[in-house]
Length: 65
Picture 1 (cartoon, rainbow, N blue to C red):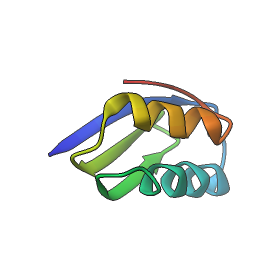
Picture 2: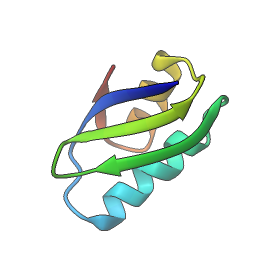
Picture 3: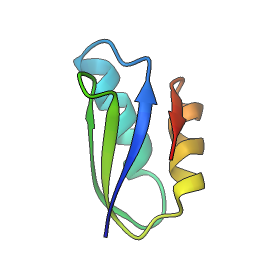
Picture 4: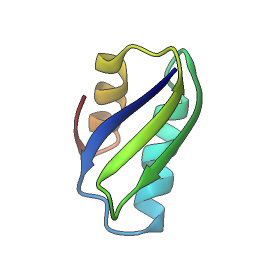
């Protein structure tokens, strides 16, 4: 299953990597990619959307599912 969440505040490749790593740490995530230009992240797997948002916020970015 694929989910896309909105992520605000990414301004560089390091930001994308930080968001990707935060998402990959969530239970149920098989793969994650962040895109600063689209202000979003796409997650493959069966993860709770609230957990995804919480992980991105904990990494220092604003997110919504």
